[in-house]
Image 1 (cartoon, rainbow, N blue to C red):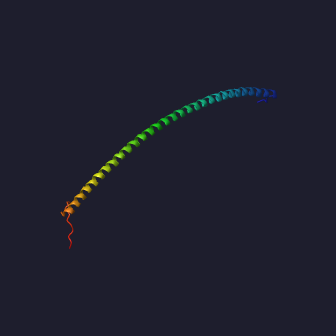
Image 2 (spheres, helix red, strand yellow):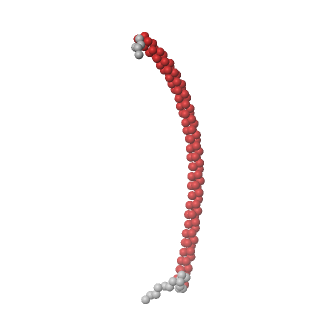
Image 3 (spheres, rainbow, N blue to C red):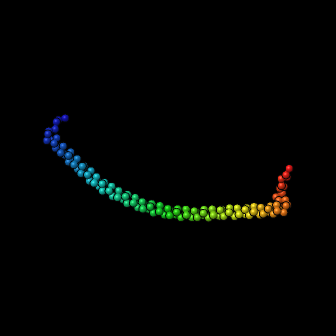
Length: 127
């Protein structure tokens, strides 16, 4: 293959450079368009995240209020159940104390009369 002259070689290089410059300009334009599009998309994502954050905060506040109401109602119910159980235990203790008192009064009366106690127990004999 014959060797190209210097002029032909420079001409070939210049033609190649024109192609490189046009391709570089195309890439620069595409890059600029990409940057604009990316900026818009990121702005949209930030806006959406902000909206979701507000929605999330509102839902959490609502759920917190609901939970506080349920806990308060549950606490009141437990308090009432405990009060009732304590009252029932108190009444039962009073009934038992009354029975014991009446039994004691009968025994004292029986001892004073000299008769046998109503429980059926005998007095121990003195030996």
